[in-house]
Length: 86
Image 1 (cartoon, rainbow, N blue to C red):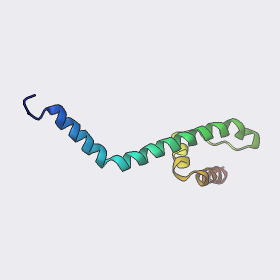
Image 2 (image 1 turned 90 degrees about the vertical axis):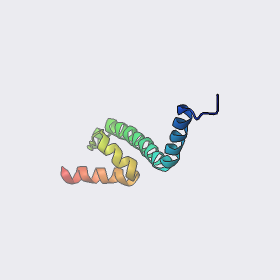
Image 3 (image 1 turned 45 degrees about the vertical axis):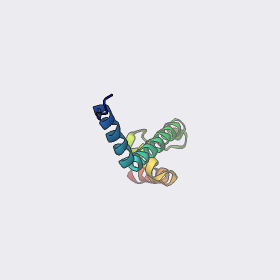
Image 4 (image 1 turned 180 degrees about the horizontal axis):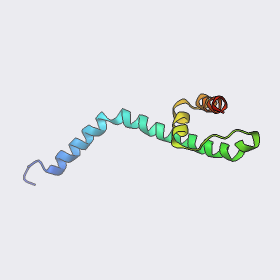
C-alpha cells in the first residue's frame, strides 16, 4: 500500500452511498414483500377451506399484493369483488 486509493475502496464507498440513499425505499419494498408473502399464505389457507362455504379466491400475485398493501380490509375487498363479479 503506497497510499493510493484503490478501486475496491471506491467501490465500497459507492456501495455505502447507494445503501444510504436507498435505505428507506428498500425497507418499504422488503416490508411489502413480507406482507405479500403472508397474504399469499392466507390465500392458500383460505382456498383450502373456502370451498366449504362457497367462496373461492384465486391464489395469485395480484391478490397477494392487495392483501400485502391493504391487509384485512383488502381481504374484505377481495371477497366483495368476488361476490359482485359472480
